[in-house]
Amino acid sequence: MPETQQSRMAEDPWRVFKIMAEFVDSFDTLSRLGPAVTIFGSARTKPEDQYYKAAHAIAEGLAREKIAIVTGGGPGIMEAANRGGAKPKTVPSVGLNIELPFEQKCNRYSNLTIDFHYFFTRKVSLVKYSMGFIYMPGGFGTLDELFEVVTLVQTQRLPAFPIILFGRAHWRGLFDWMSSTLEPSGMISPGDTDLFRTTDDPEEAIDWIVQYRRTVGVPEQLPPAFR
Image (cartoon, rainbow, N blue to C red; front, side, top):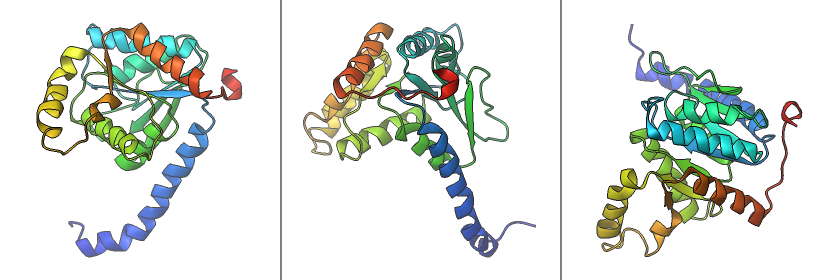
C-alpha cells in the first residue's frame, strides 16, 4: 500500500534522529583527520582516462605530504583519488559513501569508509573538515558540489580555501559563460571568478594546497593508526 503523506509526516520526527546520528558519527570520525582535501569528479571516469590518472597522482602527492584524502567513495574519479591517497599509507583515504540501491558501492581503495543515507548530511561532511577542494571533470553532482563550496566561500561562511578546477579545457566553457553572462548582468560581482584556480598540472595542484597549509599553519593531527 503506497505511503501516504500523513504517514510520512508522522515519521518525520524519527527521521531527525537518523539525521543526527549521521552527523554525529561522521563529525566524530572526520574531526580527527588533521589536514584534509576533498577531491570531486565523475563516477563514470575509466582507469585509462587522463583525468583518472591525474586524480590518482594528485591524491598520492598530497598523501605523501600527510594530507588526508576525502572523496564521495564511489567509482571513477573518487576511486582514483582514494587509490592514490591510500598508496603511501601515511594518512587516511576516506570514502563518504552514499547508499544507493543499484548504483554505488564504496570503492575498495578507501581505507576509512562512512556510509550515508542522506545526500545533504554527506555533502556537509565532504566540506566541513577539508582545507581545500579539487574538482576534476564531472557532471551534475560535481557541479552541485562546486557551486555549494563557492557560495560558502563567497558569502564568507567558509575561509578562502583553495578551490582548484583541474582540466582547463573541461572548465573553459563554464568560465566563459560566467564572465560573459553572469558578471555583466550583475548576478556575480567582479572578481568572483578569482575564487577558482585552474590547472592541467597535478604537481601545481599539489603545490597550491601545500603552500596554503604552510601559510595558514594547519596542524597535523593524524589518527594513531596513521601516525
